Length: 62
Image (cartoon, rainbow, N blue to C red):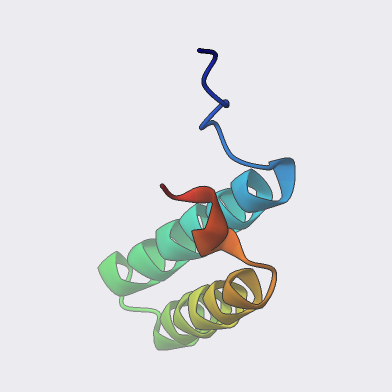
């Protein structure tokens, strides 16, 4: 019996990439003591995370 691919949808990978990018931005802001950059990274991470939930990112998980 053939199994379905569990690699996920392209939109899910786009969300993961954006969340990783905002996480890195926030980390750089934290290391550089730039609170504006830190909060931009944090807010972007949360907003992208919520947007990914609305598009059904968790439906790709078995």
